[in-house]
Amino acid sequence: MTVIPVKRLDAAKSRLRGAVAEDRHPELVLAMVADTAAAVLNATTVAGLIVVTDDPVVAAVVRKMGAEVAADPGAGLNAALRFGADEVAGRAAHRAVLTGDLPALRPEQLDAALAGVTGRAFVPDAAGTGTVLLAVPPRTPLDPRFGPGSAAAHRASGAIPLTGDWPGLRQDVDSAADLDTVLELGAGDRTRALLRDVGLSQACTPAGCAR
Ligand SMILES: Nc1nc2c(ncn2[C@@H]2O[C@H](COP(=O)(O)OP(=O)(O)OP(=O)(O)O)[C@@H](O)[C@H]2O)c(=O)[nH]1
Ligand SMILES: C=C(OP(=O)(O)O)C(=O)O
Image 1 (cartoon, rainbow, N blue to C red):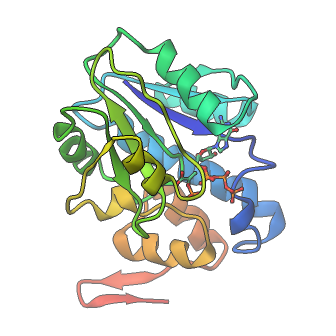
Image 2: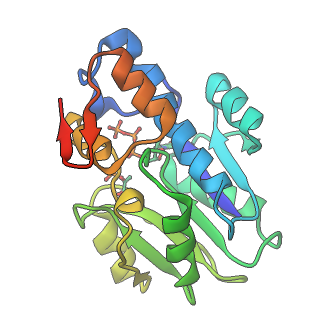
């Protein structure tokens, strides 16, 4: 089972504000969440998805896609993750938590990363400082340490870093520059459509991408 935490859309991705017009910001965040969720739900090794959120729009969209929704306990990101992981304990071999800002995630990249989970393990983000995925086998506490410098915190807590050729999995979107990168990697349909709509899309050919 996989868990994705999502902040309320009016508060989410504050560092990304300004990348698109203010009134389109919630749509962009939602599109990235939906593309992340779609990739997770299409992964063959994932038994199901639970989204921990207090946002009614996010809840409605991901439910329609086939995810379950749990209310955010309201005590921050790691509390939301612990709560989500507890909700699915005993329902699957492995539990994985994933950030909701991975619009270029591909199901096969998630499958490949999860195949390497033999103990408590994490996937650092592309920058190497943050974390995009933390996973545990049965009966192992999740002990999430997301937040600034989380890759070092997960490593220091004994989690095994997993690295592989998983560019879509590792590329989270925190800034406007990250949007360019996910477009180059190949963002999911919803994110690409939104960015095209606001004039930020790229035209890609086998020779490369150009604005
Ligand atoms: N349910 C829940 N999700 C959270 C919370 N804080 C962060 N998240 C989610 O955790 C994931 C990773 O968080 P960040 O990359 O820091 O995203 P963010 O907090 O929206 O971004 P900034 O406002 O720019 O810090 C995203 O999917 C967020 O929506 C929280 O308190 N509750
Ligand atoms: C919350 C995190 O993401 P970011 O640093 O990308 O905000 C994290 O890496 O723990």
